[in-house]
Image 1 (cartoon, rainbow, N blue to C red):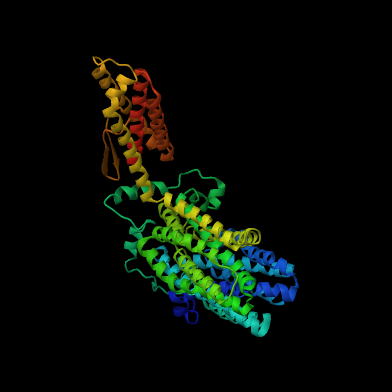
Image 2: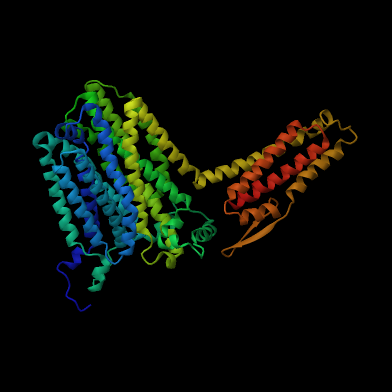
Amino acid sequence: MGQSQPWGLKWRSHTLFIVATVGIGLFTDLFLYGIVVPVLPYLLTDRVGLPHDQIQSHVSGLLATYALASVLFSPVAGIIADRLSNSRQLPFLIGLIALLLATLLLCLGQSVPVLAVARVLQGISAAVVWTIGLALVLDTVGPENLGKTIGSIFGFISIGELAAPVLGGVVYSKSGIKGVFGMGFGIFAVDFIMRILLIEKKTAAKYGATEDNREVDGNAENEEEQDGDGEAGEEDPLIKKQEEDHYKVPDGQSKAVRSFPLLHCLKDPRLLTALLLALVQAALLGTYDATIPTIAQDYFGFTSLEAGLIFIALILPYVIGGPVAGWLVDKKGPKPAAVFGFGYLAPALILLRLVQPGGKQQLIVYCVILAFNGVGMAVIGSPSIVEASYVVSMYHKANPDFFGSNGPYAQLYGLNSMVFSLGLTLGPVISGLLKDTIGYGNMNLVKRESQSVSQWHRFRSSRRFIIIVVNLAVFTDAYLYGLIIPVLPFFLSDFAGVSSQDLQKWIGILLGAYGAGLIVGSRTRKIDGYELTLHSASTAIAGHLADKSNSRRATYMLGLVALAISTVMFSVGRSVAVLVVARSIQGASSAFVHCVGVVS
């Protein structure tokens, strides 16, 4: 407290300056990544001297090298960020040094191995910048403001995604590769100055700067309401109690989990789904980066300048729609945006099959379809990271001692960066291979199918889908029960040979057999001070399995199997004994379906 304050402490530690510094850092990373994309085919041809038939494979390889380095180093960056939680600034600066070396090698390199080393260093820098940068944002604005802040940052850095390929192509055509990287060094200098000037909140607090720059208006309410679905209801007290139990970390964790606490969170299907969305999103981005320049060259005979200009069609909708989509994610939760975005991209990707080599008309078609794809990419830009952050924040709140005061957020962003970079690795490699073997149109059909998988995985873990499944199962049970009642007399007389005198008796026995299988009873469970009573559909066995099983899905499937067996026995049974057994099994199935369904 007795130390003299650094010059400009107030504005250098202000929330806006810190967020802007991180935004500039991410902007620089994407800008220096993007200016290389449209010029790579020409750089490999003019400077390295590769033949034309090897250009696509080497372009994809260099793009994948960047991403692979980021994949391998992102977890390391996350661990370092959490271990050095007293200062994020030092590793943030180290990442910038790696970026400087990478840029120099890209500017001066005369061979493929040198360019590959440059891309490795650039990938390491990206891992550090994204991991440390997002952790620094979280330290500054808090988890309650993370969604809107990331949405704003992504909206800003998308300008870099737009400007870099365009400027890279323009400058390369006018002044060559040195002009391209001269422009990059100018952006780099601004980034370096801002990172040097930055003072973290925790450092500023040591000098008595106590101003709280976090936005708090409405955030507590948003934090309570957001559960990833944007849903809330009168059952919230029960849901919150169940969520607290779900996010509790049991004692006796292994040394690996204690050293890397995020490992425990990876058991959560919501987190895994969010990471899968990030993987598919990155694979799509990598595919665009790898194929647009070569399509521009092969289909339209474009120069690097014209190839760079095509990127405007893809990224301009992202610039406009990204902040809007991020705001909607904060308001409604990430699930609607993810489902809509990936659902929208399915036909948008298929439309790319329409593009053929040709003149101005085909170029217009290509740009319009790319713009449609840009809208979809804007929508899916933020749901994955917001959803992942929310899930981890719930674990952190439920287990503050286990995860520490700072939480495992840097590890999360390191893992997210790793997954995202893996997508950037797979996207160019797979798309390049598919383009060369099955053609550009069929390649986009494969892309569409891959993102549909992630959309389905996201939807099937949603609350609405679970409710639909439960309702469908209960409907099926009731339908099969009611279907048999009116035909029992004819079934017994025509197929089982029961006389008319004994018909009523056996109908009563069969109805009783169903009840015996059901074992009608009721039980009251007390949850968070509220009593939840499950009446006639709650059996001792089904209720016990529903409570004790780690996954109610297995118990639910057991009930469905029992229902299938009873239905088959009814359809083929020709004796009263078989029908009695079938009705007993049907009753047991009903108990499982209703009990486990209601609890789920």
